[in-house]
Image (tube, rainbow, N blue to C red; front, side):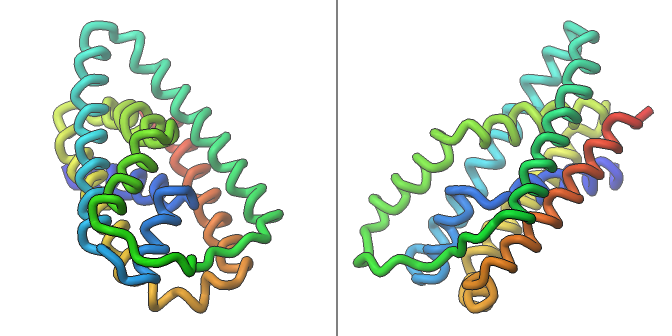
Length: 201
């Protein structure tokens, strides 16, 4: 059970660290100190719901079609390797930096609407939470709940740390090298998980 929980936690944390529109939005809100709690909670809850859908839905599919499990296993590993290569390339070529905008403050409703749009209209969210996490969870029969709890906890921890810790890391991430180092770490973590997934007994 502890192995399943830690595996879910590490996979989710590695995936969610990817630099994308949703994380950039949370980071900007943290830098501006606007509706930080609501935004972090919204991201954590929606991720948890999508993770639950992936684990429950894919679990039933693999129970009915056992041959579907190895397809998900190797398909997920291939996706992770591509994901790793993308971040390795970004680590070598990334020159962009993230800075807070100078726009006036927006209402809570408008801010939450933007956050939800960035979440549900992003296809990578479904690939990460529903497909990938759901497929890896199938490798832990009897402990999928622990795997899902670990994944959901990593998501919540990341978003709240990102939102409330933004001010502390603002000077660091004003430099492109910081993003390149982060992308490099993500690439290594994703490659390690992919290899582990392929060699899993």
